[in-house]
Image 1 (tube, rainbow, N blue to C red):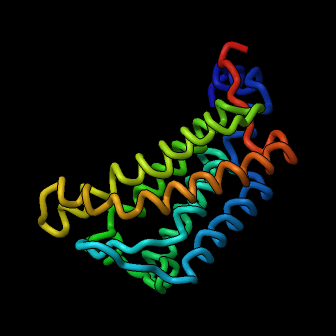
Image 2: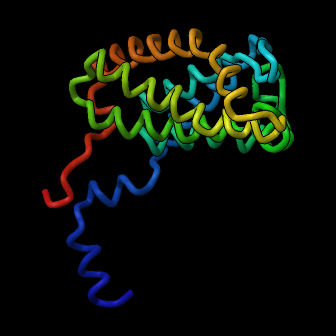
Length: 209
């Protein structure tokens, strides 16, 4: 390490450096929410429509992870579930596990959409705090939990089934009522948690501060 690098490291705020590494508490939170996402798959899945993409409660866990843990930890909690599932553990709804659910399955794009969704919800929720107002939070959660997830899930469904994109888009509307309910549940729960535990997601600070 050069003297200039040591000088920069020495003058860098300690809290900024600490946010770059995961503490034991962070790891515990990631593990807990990964377990929550997996547990929400236990009731199973319901396949409706023409594409065979299942309805699942697990997107609720994804939304909660982003809204309560923030972008990085929310993303990592979802990633942990997906890595374990790809390794063969039956953690997706209905006891599904293995690489097929991330490659050739009609629903293969949705797990990748979960990653984006958790990151979007977490990043935008951090901008809302410390005041977690219902309507802005509802918009943020819907953007990440529905729009971002569909943005990846729907095109992959169309690709894997060899159907036009508009067909997959129309079929995906079957998810909307349930996903809107999950958005409302997430916002209500997250509002209570953020009021009880302020600072759960660190507020973004100006880099020049």
